[in-house]
Amino acid sequence: MMKTENTVLQMIAGAARCPEYGPDMVKALMEKLDMNERAFALLMNVAPSTIRLWTSGAAQPSGTARRLMQIYEAGPEIVGKIAGEPSAEGRDS
Image (cartoon, rainbow, N blue to C red; front, side, top):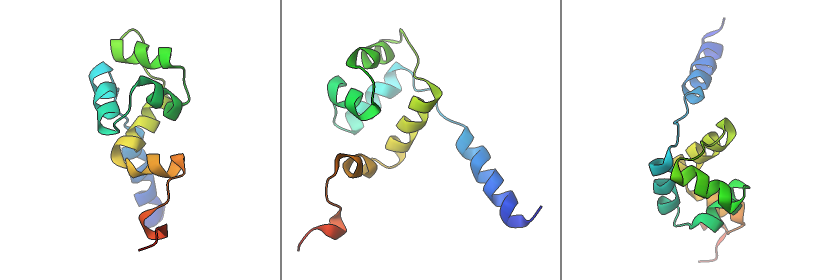
């Protein structure tokens, strides 16, 4: 196997480790993104009741939801891009 392939596999293996996102982590992410349950539900494409289940500990986010939360936590600016906000480069000075 080529060295580049090894590096890519190592990156994928590292990315495969995803936090569990228990209630406190979900709440902290919502706070970091300055979102209430309804807004976070829209972002995550789930019902607000699902967010309440996650924040109460009554249910755990799916693997896909955890990965999305990991992405939003690592790069909160992506939320603006999803929402259609103009990027800093695209704004008039």
